[in-house]
Length: 173
Image (cartoon, rainbow, N blue to C red; front, side, top):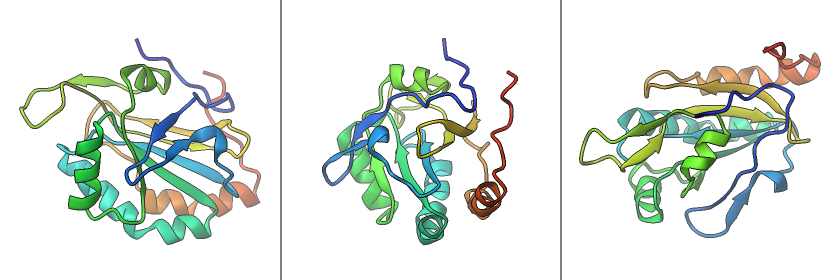
């Protein structure tokens, strides 16, 4: 059963290998404003391809907004390497190998494959903003591939959130 995450609580632990080498660890991130953690379904998902391809073109806007970005999936290394190459995601840190327990810890929905092109089990989409102190600020999860927030719109709101000390919403449960 997934856990309902709450704004202002500490984000779950996340440490995953990166395509191209190294390990991405949330606790080691030092963004000016937020770390944006995006969970995508995997190589099989054409909606993820469109979403991450758009994000790849917006990375300099994210950088200017003081937002570091990682996209993560439950795909194994070979599929993540293929994703980064085939989708031309040269600007995005792409992490792989998330476990079902990682997905549960982040409140994500898990899905069993219905096509041969899908991995046996994968996480449905999720997008999170994590403050530099590790607290969750924005939480957006979906149980369907086509329901996702517009990243360009979200990035346009970073300055407002920071400059106005806009509090995390939904803290009452």
